[in-house]
Length: 384
Image 1 (tube, rainbow, N blue to C red):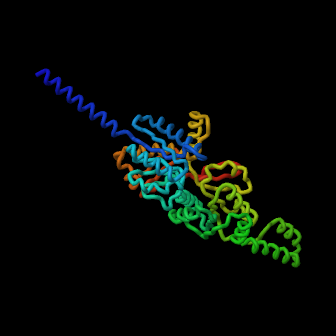
Image 2: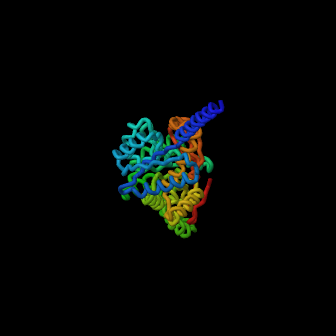
């Protein structure tokens, strides 16, 4: 009888051990990583791998396993690597980085891809854009305009490949548009277009006419008045209170320079642009200050940069920070669903707080609640 009990206990323990080992295997959170590991963009891929390893270390849970695969920044290689991840039983993937590499991924219907792109148009159904999209940015700008009670805002959008993304963001955010203009980024055409938008020639002619009128008048103070007018460039009110410039880098600076040339001053009209990722060169552009823009939480980004630098002795990119947060996001969502149905959680309404800020998830879309900043007197100032 005692032997029989021992045998039964051994069998039960064996069943328990088998169940326990199976449970551990099932609970493993396998995350694919589709990144450029070769080619001209391999440094981006390397920085993402480092950021993801930091996230896994900080979460401190042995159940997370990361499986990097190379896209080589080519759509066909991205598909090949995605198929390899599928063969490994992986269901959720961070990546690809670039929009162009999403082309064939709708063939991998059993996989959910959280891409680092900020483009949202024409995505395959199994791809979720996690970048700082235009809707998130315009929603934040809208909040600022309403807070400051700015009624008449004109929008300047370059004729570029991302033009339709900008239009979608404006529409989805339901931002109040006074007038909307598109412009050619070629310098000569740009200046001419800004002149027309700001009615520069009319305002300049108004000044010349006023100086001429006073000169021909009997006004005893006409010399003083003329000297005062000669210091000006134009006369006449502009019919807008703020200008939103959907541009970046040198092209953004060309637009602001053209606005200054046409006597539109940031001290009198709000200059607002899109997320500049804290471009330090704007701190030196004192003529166009104050200038405003939405972005991620600067304090959190700075803290992440210190953490990353201490670990790898190099500075991270904003894609590194986004990758770090996405590991945390997937880990968080895994508590609310079994690993084979994680994709369903991106259809429900969820929110997640990461280093970038708060992710709002709904209907296979990720939007970000951004902060709002201004640069004035060579300083970056947080508005909200």
